[in-house]
Image 1 (cartoon, rainbow, N blue to C red):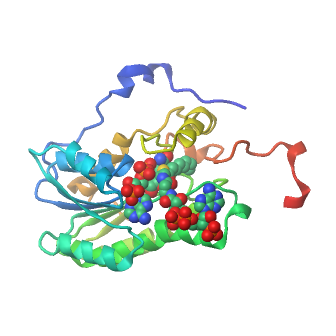
Image 2 (cartoon, rainbow, N blue to C red):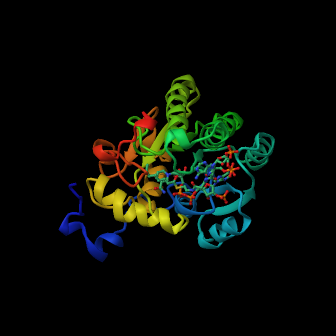
Image 3 (tube, rainbow, N blue to C red):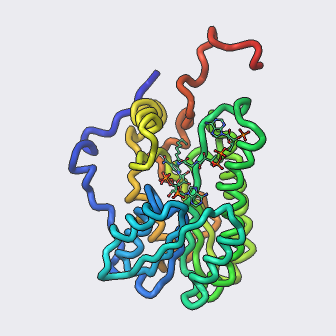
Length: 293
Ligand SMILES: CCCCC/C=C/C(=O)SCCNC(=O)CCNC(=O)[C@H](O)C(C)(C)COP(=O)(O)OP(=O)(O)OC[C@H]1O[C@@H](n2cnc3c(N)ncnc32)[C@H](O)[C@@H]1OP(=O)(O)O
Ligand SMILES: NC(=O)C1=CN([C@@H]2O[C@H](COP(=O)(O)OP(=O)(O)OC[C@H]3O[C@@H](n4cnc5c(N)ncnc54)[C@H](OP(=O)(O)O)[C@@H]3O)[C@@H](O)[C@H]2O)C=CC1
């Protein structure tokens, strides 16, 4: 199998530390952003960057110490960060947090980032397992958005739904998650239409492979050693900073005509062989098991 490596001129430490912060300082001063899944990985990076750009950020997640860590990471001199601990699948709790956090401030940016799944081929996913993943990655997104609408409408805010590269093509081991993300994509396009007259914009950002600190070691190694070299034409994972900068760009005035879009920040992974979360894909012919046909 062909493996992908990063271009030699885009390798090494210079690339790793390259500053992707291209937006003007204090670009988002005076705005209020709500970010779910704010205690780790992509969500944490988004919070840190939005505060740096001057926004007041409300973070939501389940793990209090993780949210506290985000609070410690954000700088204090520009915007500010406060957090609420909640399971986004708890509709009543999440509705009450969104309205408490936004009654005064309204919402300029809502980032639906909380999400995740386990990896299993479809015939290993129980009804309850499918439901659990759809609850987190689709139903909770609807609840958050529908509560936030009245606050987004005050000044014409923007919604960014974090999705997965490959949402339009499928990935082995992710039937539940991609079904949910495809639902979010359809909801994104529909709400972009329905709410355009309110000035509310709705987009999906789909990272490819992001190797963040919060991933379990076995998943991180599998992504680094197999999925990236075999399936990401750019030959490298997507840095969390790239996602955070694009979220801020969409929220900025420069993004004011961008709505109803799916943007895949994935080094062309969605054009390649697909991001498949199994050891071997496609299966070798001799290993095909008749009983599973
Ligand atoms: C595109 C390629 C690259 C993709 C890279 C993507 C990376 C990321 O998304 S990073 C985010 C990483 N973080 C996570 O994924 C963590 C979030 N995950 C979860 O919280 C759980 O996986 C959850 C969504 C299922 C929610 O868990 P919870 O509601 O607590 O569910 P339970 O533990 O009660 O289980 C419910 C149901 O699911 C079955 N199940 C759980 N794990 C597995 C598994 N590995 N294989 C098969 N089935 C599983 C579990 O057995 C339960 O079903 P029943 O037994 O039928 O009751
Ligand atoms: N890593 C990757 O390769 C990719 C990730 N993504 C997506 O990006 C998003 C962020 O992932 P990433 O940063 O990598 O992974 P993380 O696991 O670090 O982030 C997921 C966040 O969601 C929160 N979360 C999970 N379940 C719930 C819940 N029920 N209620 C509230 N918060 C919840 C978690 O916090 P807590 O547990 O404290 O609640 C955590 O902070 C996810 O939607 C993920 O699927 C997309 C493409 C690739």
